[in-house]
Image (cartoon, rainbow, N blue to C red; front, side):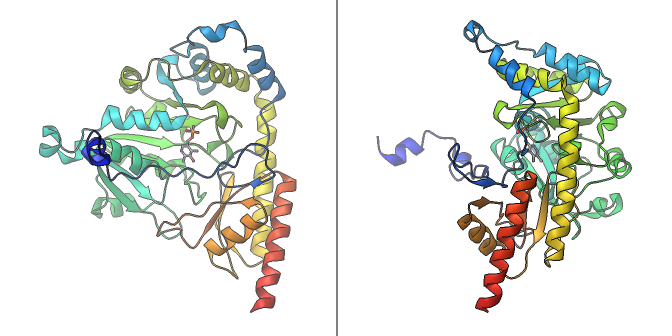
Length: 378
Ligand SMILES: *Cc1c(COP(=O)(O)O)cnc(C)c1O
């Protein structure tokens, strides 16, 4: 078969399709300081690792609990809802993709021709760069509304007037706090926006544990609002892929219908349940990370960088001396990985995950060293 005829086997709209670009994962145990994917600098609680080790036995031949019942029960208790209000995913990415498939008509369907808003996924720009990818796979119509220059959300009145926003859109994704800026939003403002929106709203709270407030209460007060959370960032569990969503039982049931039967792996369920049983350990980590975030922000500001105020475990900065991609390269040479996005709204900035205290010190030392060499060479 020729290459051309093999390509002919693939759905036409996927041939030109651009996949999500994950942050780089260097090979295990190399000596990188890794501040590029917002992972937690601290390991899981020792008891969590122990629970996972203790689960490595003959049960591997069995399927895991397809309903993740134990985990859903624990999560329901924590959030003061019923297990019917909770669905667990293979990371929250799995949940976000399920939302597109459950609530949005493909744009070439007959219903979409009559009611374009039923095929519309909308989100703010910049926000989580996965949204356009999962919308694109589904052939959804996409609207992307620019955030204000300070990454604030435009007012409901401004959004009503915008051609890049539709209050009737089938699905709205809101990253709160925002990524990649780190900006947090008041629940009162989010509620005002949710009231104006007529379709499903997903509040993507991947970083809520590092913020001043969270909007979980909106998922219980408004039937069309879902809140998604993840164990990846705050709970040091990226490796295990556990995310979940809280909302009205009818919406949760719709997601449950299309879910892969065994979408949550067994060790992940064990790790997540154990995590919830050791919350105090993580609370302490949140405090350290937030303090480190604030210290790092101040230190970079003192060097002349512009640092956007953050309510997450990362900061967005506008560097001085060199361009953002040059800083990215220079720090790479020092074995420090940070994130640079070649995206129009943020291509002058660098996103830096908050590391451990010693990692943040090494980062600052490297930045000072690089600044010195740029000053002497100019
Ligand atoms: C990291 C991240 C996620 C995905 O988390 P997983 O649970 O690891 O899939 C979702 N949304 C945002 C905004 C994130 O930054």
